[in-house]
Image 1 (tube, rainbow, N blue to C red):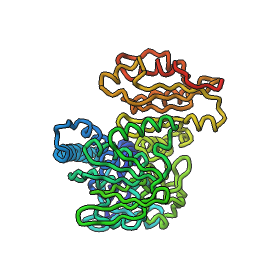
Image 2 (image 1 turned 90 degrees about the horizontal axis):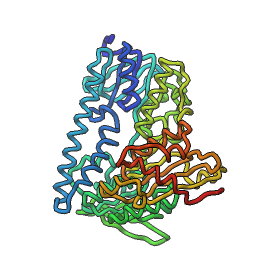
Image 3 (image 1 turned 45 degrees about the horizontal axis):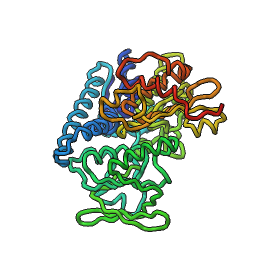
Image 4 (image 1 turned 180 degrees about the horizontal axis):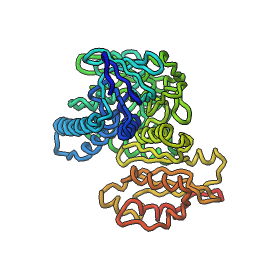
Length: 465
């Protein structure tokens, strides 16, 4: 690197250590390009996923399910958090070393802000540093949203998901504001650890992104695990007491109160753009604060790209990884790859068992004008799925939405053991035009969850034909 008077010049500057940015940094550095990656926190090397997102939360899912009735909840939780923190520390170090050990890549810890379209000023522990680059990637991710409810932001009992998983004290009573997928995942985790969990959701139902029949099964699983779910709940106030917090909410015009030891604000995440001084670079943002990009992830300044959560797209690590492929195709390839190429992108909410979805729901398919047929079966009735019995969890349902005329797979919702893996097979089939009959008649190893497709897809419960 060229260094003079606390300044750097680079071919590529990456702001933020997320999945997409670090992948581009490693690739460009491996090709001999001069790369600088700036991360504002030493605790976030590697990005959200290995530090405060998918890795620690899914590790907590695993540990919570291992707790036996004789295990003391607080002791088990504290030990689990310690093991998870050790894991994230390992990942964090590997991510840092993997890039910083490259001769052509430098990792700088500090807060970056644009001063012009090609230059950022980074405030580091050793003083300010100016970095100029030909190509810049904004990869700063997202941050939890805490709603402006009276008392919520100032309460000593309010925590975000990031803060909750970092505490070693298991809340005896946990109130969760927000019944989206994040809130329900945490409800499932902390309920299994032994917390008394209440979810307050403003919408009339939870699991609103799936059909009502699947949502009912998923909600019932949580309710059977003693998680209280209150829908249509308008939280109006949060009041601190000496030893607990009181959450005030209304349903159907009636006021209610809920006492808790912690309140989890689980109402989504917003793009982290606040401190970047994007105006100085001439980079436009959307009404929701995301960096505005085109289908090739270029911003209003063509040499500046935005990857991951910060660009307002789906907030998934695997989408950020695909963002890196689009950017690398712009920098090194033919420049043809785009976000328009994305078809059948799956999603999983890690309750237990997981709920994984891809494509259209039955309701959406009918609204789109398809003549549909539906294959659906409770997991407990799927003869060709002995794995569910082997691992002692036969809860859930599998549902496929098919085009009645072409046998095309329009969508699927899998609430079952191994659903987070199964959905990838379904998504791959959808992307390559594999029809339901082929998936139904394929040869799968035994005993596995995948072979459930043999039974489920042979069971048509509704058809427009």
